[in-house]
Length: 134
Image 1 (spheres, rainbow, N blue to C red):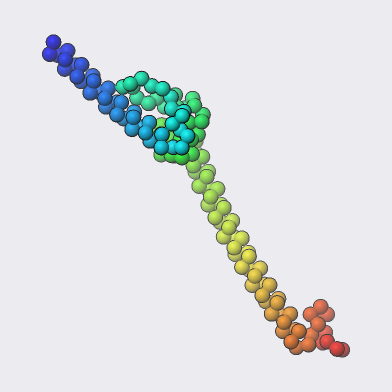
Image 2: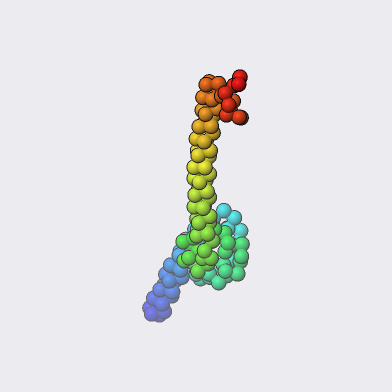
């Protein structure tokens, strides 16, 4: 009987370890907004099954979008996080380019304004380039 008791205790400890790991994984998934409603059911003492998560497109996309490292761990990665990062970098570069173009236009406008002002001060018509009053 002692061997049976030891086997039962070992089996229980193993089931508890698996359950603790599964609960930790589920807790991480539940930190993702909206993901807790889509968790697949599992039996106590059994691990989280990534195949069940793969079947649920909503949960799969939520995990991929919000926690790329967890998605990689579960085998759900689809590269969407990388595309979002590249798009964000492209937006930043576009914003910098537009700022540079705006600054160039501002400089050109200031120079043109200065030329018009100087021409008016020296008596030149800015449209024709001739001296006024001639």
